[in-house]
Image (cartoon, rainbow, N blue to C red; front, side, top):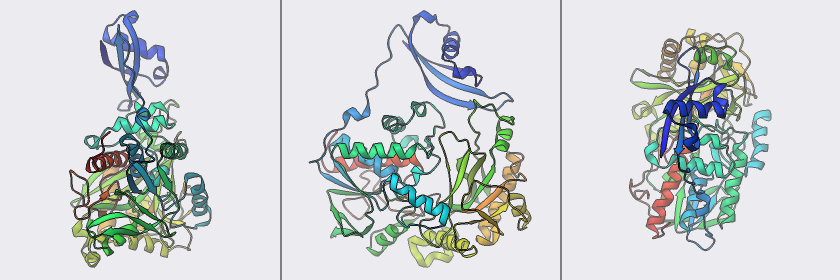
Length: 521
């Protein structure tokens, strides 16, 4: 017999295995000697009172042993002679599609415009320290995609899309800590993710898959209405039995190539705004009612959403104990994003605060057809760059001054390494975006009292929240609606929003490919 038991402990008690076990047994009214094995299945923080609690779900087995869970990697097989699946992009969708291929006997051939994780670091350093943007290797492009240098959050609202635990278990099998299997809001951290990503690559190659870096796709190999493969700027061509497009939300050249090739794409909703940064200690004080916080509690986070004049204004990719990073993918633009290390021990908390953009907000850009949203993004990013000194320094404003319409006389210290300078951020956005941001922040200050803090600063521009384009596919076959052999996938195709949902979409897309090719697991 097994039972699931919910218990609440202090942060200190939750570090003691004996205390956890005894509390669970007592809660269930069991005899300790009858319990043959037990394990924590879920962990979260309840911060509603002045004394936050750690909430645990414990599974206990009475007079029987817990069943052994087999490793997913035990199902991988040699695919060196299998049917070839060309996967464009080595982000979460692309790499998890590659792993799924190993379960179906398909040979993944992954084509990535950027560099491997180790070489990619030099280009990130060039952005941070010298403002040099490599359009093929940056915080969005390269091994692991944008997910490598993010907070590494591993939760999603898309539970119907696939097997979340399968994604987490694969991460554990490639080096992630087992706690991600039980933490409600699990994360890995950008200092740990590169090693895990490299381990995934090694697995794919071990079983006969291929990964080609510095291979930017510059064309599609077509035979009438069927996609046969891709050509690359370095002269390489890759042909296969199916092509999965998992290019990420910032692959603007791919969107343009699709449109120029007459391949149907659509404009979709997305969001634009700023990144807000606070002292982490202040967010802890609001959330935990503690300053300093109990060292056994994680850095606190928040999630905020309001409706303003018919549009959502919401927090996005909140990074407790995190850093703001320059996420431009081309020279001449300013884009910011957030990331956290595994310990989340930065003195700053940051989050995107963005406004939903719908089709009717893009009327001025209708001449660009389905690329209307992409051009709005680019216009704002280039405008923000244009008021600066040609580096990756970003314009910023104290939140209080933004709401008053006043340029800040000084700025607080920030985690953003390239540096900040004072500017009127409202003037950088279309009026409808700036107005909704202001009203959204005022509403946040009511729902999270004190959010408009003296040292809260907002930084422009948070513009890569999701793809502004959807590459339409059949909901069952997952094949493009008009191009056979082409399988749009992940964030770039408009079907995911984060590491886990992109990974699941990659897995599900390969299952559809396997079915179409008559290959079974």
